[in-house]
Image (cartoon, rainbow, N blue to C red; front, side):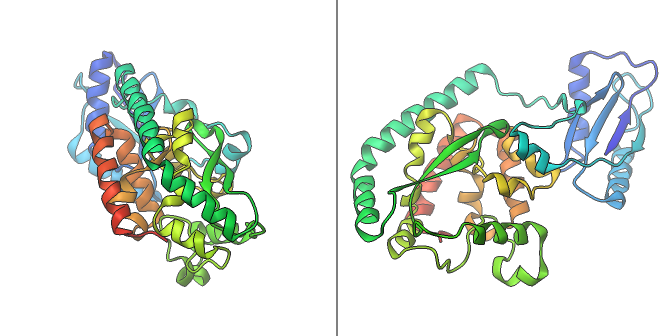
Length: 320
């Protein structure tokens, strides 16, 4: 963590503080978090080691020498760690005081209302138009394998709030879930022994998963298995567009900066990584795309992503 201290005679307005934080934001990455620390200090939590942090300080020093009042900026390097497992246990974010965020990207009430209206209209229209497809999928699941039609799973929504995530069941009812847990742990730990298996893919799907039924494989390839999530959107657990909601045991393996993907916006059915990278990007790349979306989303962006999602699904690109 880097502390940027303003001058002792620090006196500035909120507008000047936002201006300074915006300048500092230009010198860090999407995965780094900038926030308020004390009366005259800004903190930057960096996704890097000490060497990388010192390089960041040098980069900022070469561009920013004074605050808005002309006082010299000073820099201090501190170590910081955050336990993701403790976050999972409480299902609430453990965000320290320094993250009273001074990033000016705060969605207005009108933006949030517009996004919710898009979610309500989009999910209702989708349910009505796709009802025949969902009925056919439900019958196919019921007639070809024993067990429930709908697979319900606890996922974490915005701010770590748990909810029941809905999908058409694509696996055998007696499928061993520990296989996926081990796969995720190896993926997040970058285990060299399992590198050939998971290749650090963005989404935690296992190649040639033996637990998937023949009908389930078709549902996954066509993304039909995701359609029940329209009801999650209707209930307000999810949005049409946003980061994919993780399983609690996935979050146990997160680094601190990964947690931001479930702290900043509501999870969605589709998002940047589905239309830009699909299954061809790494997990870290997926998180970076999620953070980019959280910082820059608009209703028009959501509409463009939804339209591109239709094209990607029809092409069955990256589905598995």
